[in-house]
Length: 112
Image (cartoon, rainbow, N blue to C red; front, side, top):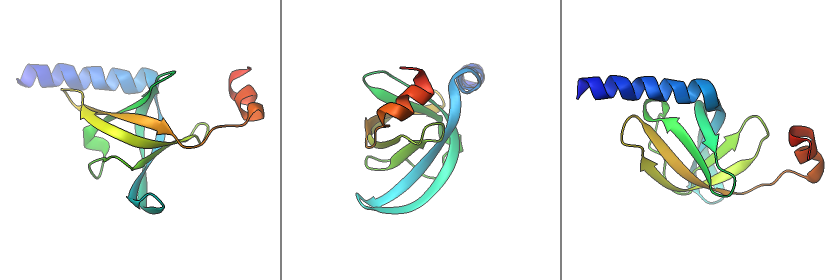
């Protein structure tokens, strides 16, 4: 078991090193009331279905449906719809977009 954990930690570090970015996690009391926020390092992925992969140990609380994730690189805000463990040391949050960038902002970031 210990060896698998070590391999999992190495894989997790590789994910953060290659795909990682700063994310702000906001704990929501209800749909309109944020309680507190924290910045973490995590990997954001997905074209049609957005997900965020975050090292479980970096989270000060357990993520739940309704909490928010904001990408610090472009200020896009997402609501967490579901949270599942990855089986090793990370959690994967399935996300729904709450805000979209304008066409001008998309062009600035992507050249589209």
